[in-house]
Length: 329
Image 1 (cartoon, rainbow, N blue to C red):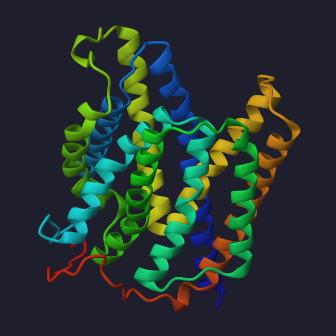
Image 2: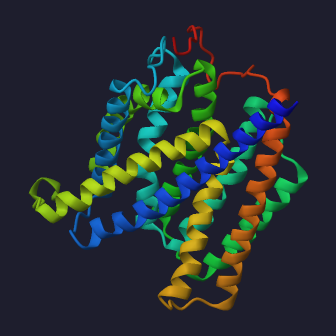
Image 3: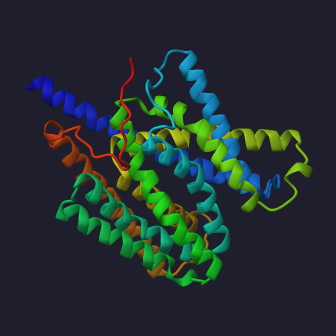
């Protein structure tokens, strides 16, 4: 019994570390990307995403050469579940950046809220997952808090709305199917990243010309530009790795809420540190969202630990496939 309790405690500590890792790396890369866009004037978000993926793939390959993890056996594009995941991983980030570019911050945040019920519905349809009443109340409180903090910056754009509507199903499939494919092949997060990133880079590069403005080939690569864009790529590796850890080991909803937590904390921090003008209602909404997310995380981790012995690895594939599934050997 003592060993079982210790294992549960270790598992919970690991999940908390994954969440903290993802949160701090995401906040760091946000500020570094802002420097890339403003200070060194690299105004090509899709190209920056490609650089992020390339640096991430390089980091994953280096870790593989160091025998940190083993490659995934028996996985290929012949498996429609893997192929679908490769496509959505390559598409979702440029779509997200385009949505942010075309919409106001408030409208962008409101649409991101729609991702939560989409993920809940998709997990219920595919895996029969349900959430407890406590977690449901927390999710509702988060949505209300983010809505209150964002509602004063709502600007409607037909093209921006269309882009956001296209982004939502891709993002939901991406967040849900990552953990499912990882369990299907019984592989590590790094192993799946190494298998999927080359294909996702090709997909992302193919759609980049439709997202970025012209002039990429004429960009002047100064030493300062190399430094900040390279640093952005390094932190992007940490963000991708930590994000995939959260999605694969804790769940898609936890990853979504980490994004909402980042937005709320940055907003409150900007009001306190930089004296940016937000109404008391906006600050209160952001603070309420932060408290709700923290409590949701506490409840979710507690439920995950209590249900560890009840979990089953029987999962229905997102797409019917006859390919054999094999884990690391």
